[in-house]
Image (cartoon, rainbow, N blue to C red; front, side, top):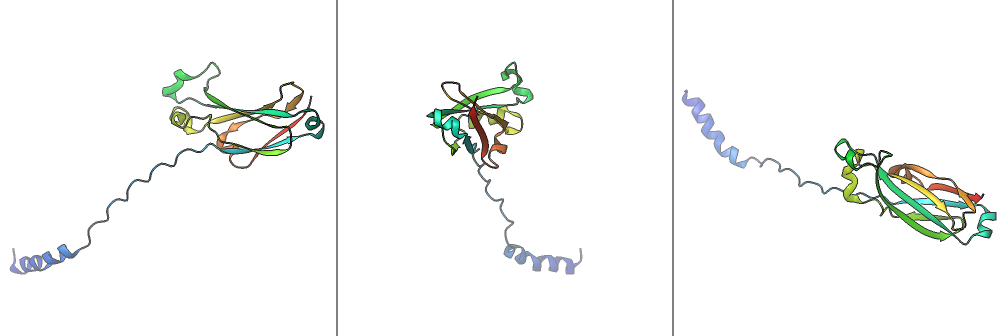
Length: 152
């Protein structure tokens, strides 16, 4: 080796110690907990509101199984979870649903981690008929879900 190469290497050695340390990997970001809350815009026709005091909103949660959880599926081919039930006055109003009926620890069991919800509204006398919402929870979160009710 030439003495010039050795000298250049020795002169560069102190510079290596002054070099900045390589950037450390940032700490992992904690996964944001799943949020399944949404709002319902309840519309009761005046003639129905005049005859009823209360209605019951039921939000049933379910999901499409992953191949490894297919054994948990019902005969309908879905994994069923809990149902949130809320009683409200029979008037036009916005109702906040927390999504508590969808267990966060079970999201891993369904395809894409995307739960579905079926929202129905009934009264104890069975005198009203209401529209039904059935879609992904993330669709319900985009804007309040319109549910329309009137006398049968």
